[in-house]
Amino acid sequence: MGVEKIIFYIVALIMVSSATMVITVRNPIQAALFLVLTFFASAIIWMLLEAEFLAIVLVLVYVGAVMVLFLFVVMMLDINVDRLREGFTRYLPIGVVVAVAMVGMLITVVGSDNFGLDKIAEPERHLADYNNTKALGSELYTKYVYPFEIAAVILLVAIVAAIALTMRRRDNTKYQKPEDQISVKREDRVRMVNMPTEKKK
Amino acid sequence: MFEWVISIFESFPMGLQTTILILLKIVAIMIPLILCVAYLTFAERKVIGYMQLRLGPNRVGPRGLLQPIADTVKLMFKEIIIPTGSNKYLFIISPVLSIAPALAVWAVIPFDDGMVLADINAGLLYVLAITSIGVYGVIIAGWASNSKYALLGAMRIGAQIVAYEIAMGFALVGVLMAAGSLNLGDIVRGQSGSIFHWYWLPLFPLFIIYFVSGVAETNRAPFDVAEGESEIVAGFHVEYSGMAFAVFFLAEYINMILIAILASVMFLGGWLSPFEGILPETVFDIPVLGMLLGPGIHWLLLKTSFFLFCYLWFRATFPRYRYDQIMRLGWKVFIPITIVWLLVVGLLILGEVPPWWDAA
Image 1 (tube, each protein chain N blue to C red):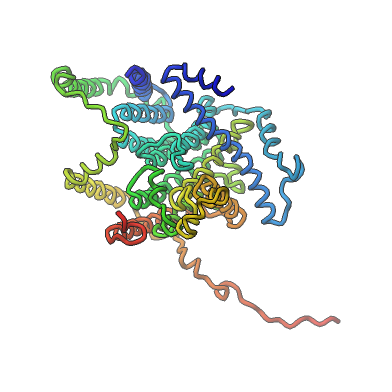
Image 2: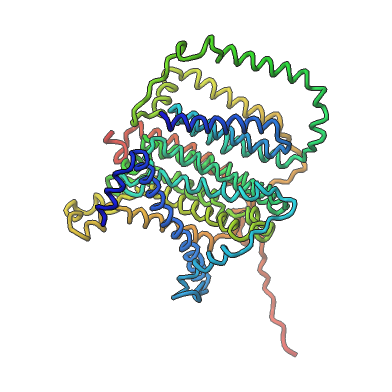
């Protein structure tokens, strides 16, 4: 248990400090990178909770795909830092309201009234052959199969809607047709001309 | 002599003993791996040389065999130049970010029955997750260099890796369905029987797609538009020199070997011997010949070398893809094929088609 606790405190420290850096650092790219670090640290904490599947999927989906695209967009935008900081005092009251509301909600959920070892029992330790992925899979596809599938369909609808809303076709765009390009024959492109040889004078 | 070492080792506390053992195993994987990378660069130059009717490197050492050592020494003594206007911290961190995941994946690779550093349940997922982190090294390198060519290269490779990762992930889902396990050792054990029990046969389209996506993921010819020396000089690592460049280079080659070894583990039966089930069982009991013909790490290495040779072969053969065609191949060709083949695999498993799924 000793080593585990040390790992937890180190990783939690990294996670909290990098999460703070996300909102304090000036450069948006560095902020995105600190967000990646936060995700990674939380994956390690999930791993300590024996949720190996969720931890690996967090790295795979959020670190490996979502944040890469995020970083991409931030890199392409030419963000003027000074203009971002302009409205600080104007937006401060709204920010304070949102922050207070969020802290209040967090306290009601994980405050000492509803959360703690006396309220929820300590999760039991599993043996080395415990397969978290298998356990999660069999729960998802038996007990929660309908919610799971409905969620999948909603996501699909969202993807289709996002593409349908943002895609616009212009008439004058020129597309290439690879199948036409591949099926081209020599005869279509080259004309062999038979010319009589010139005679020497 | 050895008893003396062992007695000292046993006097250590248990935690320290495991740590030392794990560190020794890591060294035992790392040193051959780095040597393989060095001689893979040599093999690449030789193979492509012969394919183009040249000799390749033949001046340093006998038959040029010391060429990679000379290259390493040269790279080590070069100055690392940090461009003005670059982001210093990120510029130095990014090579580390690209090599660390490339090395971390090797923890779950099974070299022989039970010969694996970390025998974890979710091995396949771990491989996917860790390799997907490697893209940060490249993207950050491109951005931190403060150079337009580097940024263009980073953009290209970022989009390319995200696109091909999906096809690769689907190919791995096929393997996972066929084996019924995420553990790489179990995947190999599921293929035992004969050469026709290996998953290359029922998962043939996935096998091809996996390897081609792997070539695209490692940013090698014909998908090496991120380097594209004719358009954008050298892509994301234009501004890097000396050891900082060498680390990127090392990461690229380690990833190549990784893709090759994963393809052999998942589709060509890993350490299993192709003679299994063809020759009678008694042949494997003959002292030396049986060892050679029977299953073992040498078969895995042979299969891996075959894929590595294919990498070099592709590079010498195919002209570079145009970028929009790379994207078309990834999104419009590979992903639909993998999804269709996943359905086919599902039906094959439901129908308990021999020889792969009849026993269970």
